[in-house]
Every structure is written in C-alpha cells, then in structure tokens.
Image (cartoon, rainbow, N blue to C red; front, side, top):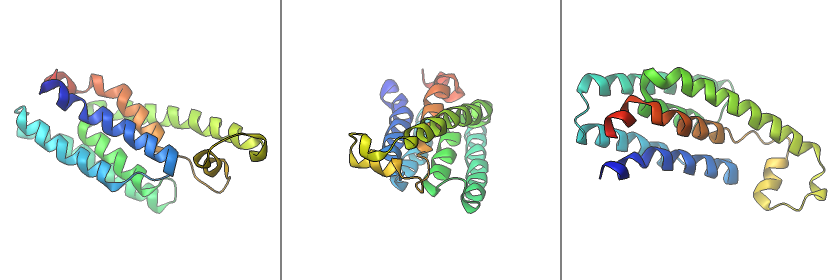
Length: 164
C-alpha cells in the first residue's frame, strides 16, 4: 500500500504534462484527484493536522497566485490548478525548488518550441498534436514544466519521506 500511494503524485504529474502536450489542456479531474488523494494519503499515514494545514496553505497560496497569472494571460487555467495541486503535495519546504525548476524547465521548453516553430510545418512529418503546437498563436504546454518540476522535487518532499 505504501508504494502505491507514492505513485499517485508522479503519475498525475506525468499524465498532466502528457495531456497538455497532446491536447493543450489539463483536465480538472487531474487536479481534483491530486487534491483528494493528498488528503486521503496524509490522513491514512497519520500526518499531523498542522502539517496537513501547512500543505493546504501552500496549495491555496499557489492557487491564488495561479489565478492571478491566469487573469494576466500568463498561464492557462489548468496550469494554475496543477501548480496549486503540486504545491499541496510538496508543501512550503519544497515550494521554492518546485517553482525554480518549473521556471527553468519552462524556459527550455519555450526555447525548444520557438526553435520548432522556426521550421516550416510542411517540411516536418509530424502528427496533428505537433502541428497544433507549431502554430504561433498557440501557447506553451506549461504543464510539461510543472509536471517535470514536480517529479524532480517530490522525492525530497517531507510527504515522500514520511511515506517511504
């Protein structure tokens, strides 16, 4: 049971990144499953209520910031919710690393997509999802960066250590 609960967060982050790449959307159900599973996992393993409350505060803070970034047009709604769900699992202790790595991976992602878009689409034998990504008016699938950062940071989180 221990190891299966440890797979929820990485599986959800990987799935969210893949969905964003392929469809340019992150379904709400991913963030909802992450939030509910965090609460169940934390309760099941007897994580103290004050620790859970701090994790919830980290998630709420990132949701507020994410909503602001969405309102400014900087990120999509799915990205904002995924960022908040990730912060819920990681807590304040790992939040700076999570955000820093998200930014770094996001920068490399942006550069890769800019380079990809520099080539004429007709010259590239690519599937429909890649053609959609090639269009300059389409945003970036930032869920990839958020998911990658979550996967890199999760093993260092207090929750992971408590469940290991």
